[in-house]
Length: 361
Image 1 (cartoon, rainbow, N blue to C red):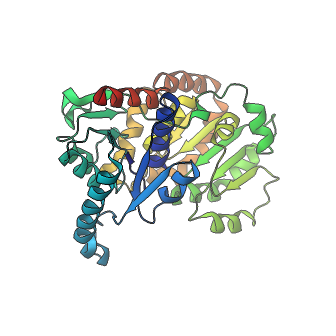
Image 2: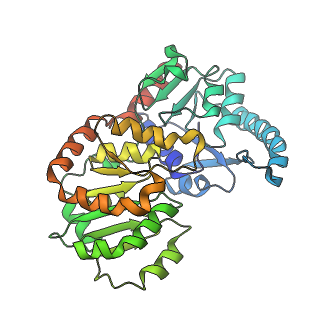
């Protein structure tokens, strides 16, 4: 049983773990548990797995009406988790983060079902820190996580990623053709995540003349919340077909293979995918996340000379110019590629499956 979701950063690693299980044990029965109304309720069935939803959401930092219902949601989710576990009878439960992980793993550990946490960030979330005392194993993406979790439970596995990006060799031409790109011009990719990133989108709009003058092609994933607005703004600028705007990118392997430099938020999944793809990357950590964990994710890369950092509050002024400079600096690109690849853990999903197998063997 796999629990978690809310964003692609939780959902896709969960699906990667499920796929690794199926690859190793073809007859494995897998059930996902997510949060009602969240994107996992759509994405998981699309990947071929069953999912059940809990009535649960996060606790808002401001006083809202949603917060008044939070205690009732927790009680409801604990009761529903108990029913789901009683019916499904899982041999193990793994939580990958997201609203549903807390109630399900709390009930699983109370019922003595072997439980595993997969912590994706370099700074542990509050729910996982609370659950750490109860679970049997904690799979992490970064070393030195003993400051958050019991050292004896830790295994550094890395973050599971989509299998199609683990080998991009030979895909560049297919990617250029798919996105209708010119092989003689450099390609910059802007990744704002499934929902989008206001700072990255505004930086793009304000810097379109620079990119056009430099002859740089852009694969621009602006996110669901901003697609209509950015489409209208882009239509007002003559860009000679250099700018390719998308709400969401399904063919991520082709997008990575086509790109010379990537600008991205520093969510755990993005960091892991870019490490495996081996792309020169500029991280712009979101300031609107718990415990500022994206800045810590990015710092772990920058400290190893594996990426470039531009702060969110400086991005509108500096980001695109820095990206243009990096595209033109072959020596720095080569160095970043070498160092970011050294941070990659391409077998993370398989390693997590192995840890679970050890628990239930």
